[in-house]
Image (tube, rainbow, N blue to C red):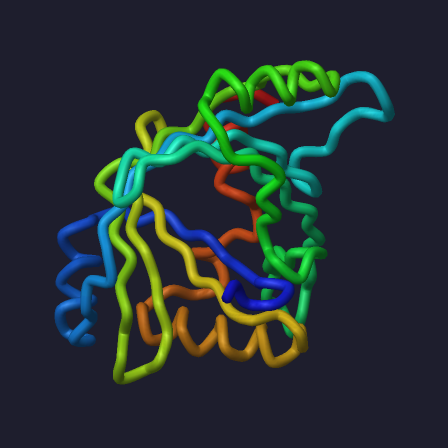
Length: 195
């Protein structure tokens, strides 16, 4: 079950070999490898769509289990004790609105007045469990961005979430200046001058 009101920070991984070496020191275990592409959509019909607060996308999984889904996220950015992180406003985190073929997903969003904005491909991705510290992290390669990672915790209590995220960041060797509350779509859009 997805964590309730998931809270997350993202970080760039300047040297993937160093990051993997750190994970090895922490005795991290591979949970699974994955790859997918997210196709982000926006709506120009009502007030301007704010992609830092709402995300609507078609996710096309390549592995481990090929499938296609329409996902919706609604977010807020919290600043708790100096740490900015994004928090889902939906208990489910990402809400799956529909599953079907890519063509069916695309037709559904276009018929609702949305248009495709850009896509983000995630390759060579791995989810790790760090058993000694009881948390998970990932590494994901995104063309035109580089290696990224994330930390995610249950966000029912934002103060507890901030403390958990800070503890995990410290274990991985990241400080407040190394993480962002931006979604990966916003990080990608800013770097590639799409906004």
